[in-house]
Image (cartoon, rainbow, N blue to C red; front, side):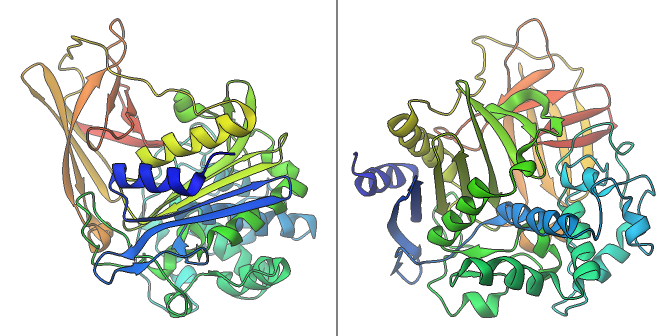
Length: 425
């Protein structure tokens, strides 16, 4: 077996990631390999039981709680949300299934801070009447954090306790997890990571508002995340049933299950999810046939390059497959002016302009997201990937980082799993 600790150290150093933990569970055998420091300002080293924010991997925990409530007969996936939660000011056609599969049409990146009280989710949902409906429910896919806050509020109403308490009682305590938490006052009792920018500078904000909890606020160790992955190897197989195709198939994602992303890696069917908060990125991939679960927790926005190389090597060693190659720019590709304009959704304004033979996209954080944005304005060069198409492009945050696809239509720009409507141009 390769020395994964040494390989993590080599690749993390090359990628500029200050701290990380690699976790591997392979049919009964577990490895947890720590690397680096939790915070460059303090120099505190990463240990196997250090805790990192896992971001949107939290959505799988929330979806698991919903699945438990379905099994208990407290709701069905095709119930309308307003039928269960009449006070929710959202489209009456949206169902629980739409929320779980990002098909609700709600403008999803709403990061409104509604306080630290146990009523924060209730107050957040009450404000959704001000949020745009991007498309009719069930007609498209667009990644939606707001929808998972609504699911968290449904859990509170049906389970008669806060989302945080429901998660602790129904999952953390039953699984015997001692390094999984949702609140900063709990995380501070552990060796907790802080995010870092691309330049390796510690971020100024530790976490997102409590109101975003069900969409992305779990902090935990790699060992605890692997225990949760094992739960899904043994139970809840229905959550891996494909619900909706994933547009574009980036990173090998071919469909969305009940919150899970479903991957095809050279014929092997995996499931998993990623997460990102303020300078912390987490990744989880699971091969049910091989009974293999791999996670990588990091404290740097430079983590994508580390993940793709390291986890591909792990899967190649165990099952003989690597992550599929990403689309790359074509040589000499030029772009027309059809896509020049402004695209906007909650929290983000994308301005596409021509500079010479290239399109350049200026990414501007707006609204409530400004409170947690380390780099509120970033420019990206767009590179065509299909010479006879003109609608498909890629970009990346820095040399050496993975290419990220973008697709233009007359009505919107689709990237990072999100629909961003065209406003001008």
